[in-house]
Image: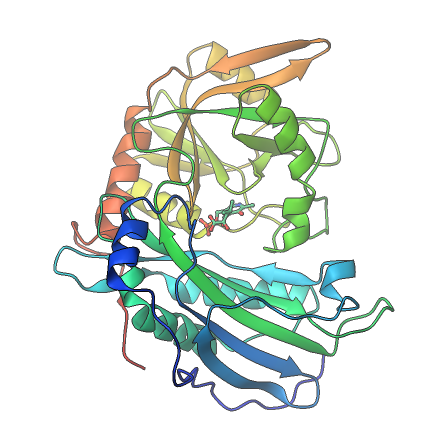
Length: 372
Ligand code: PLP
Ligand code: COI
């Protein structure tokens, strides 16, 4: 796609915006759910083929007005990111590896044929929004402010082609646990009936369509008491890939972590990458290689795979209790125990201690929210 040269975006605050009264905000932050309420402001920038990125601002969070003919509503030309800001004990607010989200948004844009937002502009937008809505960053245990940057094709046009205009926005809000807390194991539905993406598809991109295609399997899983779905490869359904919104790890009785490589069909999770680094720091083995459903089942039943967990920005690290799956007319269970395993707990703790500033940030992952 050809680009006009864009100047750095300032994301200045539009004068006269509104703020939620302190008392009301306190009530919201006491029980935030997972972004039940969006914070007061949002970051916005526009892109056209002719002008490049322009017209950036921070304005009130508001309802969008979009023509019904906007391309995103028909062809799902859309991508998004998820990252969190954390309030440390001294009151300061920090972002976790935001440059990785900036880079991944660009990679997703490339795959979805959307304009790439320069990484500096991404960083300006998230720093500015968090700074302006800093009162919304909670300080409770395991509470954070979740940011959702996204880009979508807003051109009013019914033909199928890359849109010539797009919008970038960042919204956010206070977030408690998404899936489970540190101590609760969740049940997962292993599907061989549906795929979220296939070879050379959009699996490595963070685009809305991947999530839409996961929902029917998730409904299937919910019927069997599972909150998330573990997907297998589209071609054979013999290889473990990832969950609808998280990466997957198994842990052997020798303390080695196994996770599939992210070659094309799996999202390159930033939490996954961090867990791999922390596992090495803690002296655990890491084995990034294809993991078959059969190996997972036989070695778990033989007591050689003793833990499994899912990880992602929203979910942090969630221990898996049972993996449920259909075999013929029956629903069977692969059991990892009702408690979250020791390796899972250790790595989860190591990660959250860095994120909340309780442990030394030896990898340089944390970035203080700056006045830009
Ligand atoms: N896989 C999928 C499909 C996801 O949606 C996510 C969540 O963002 C992840 C993995 C984990 O990625 P990250 O750790 O960067 O949040
Ligand atoms: C995230 O973890 O940030 C995601 O985008 C995943 C989604 C399931 C909430």
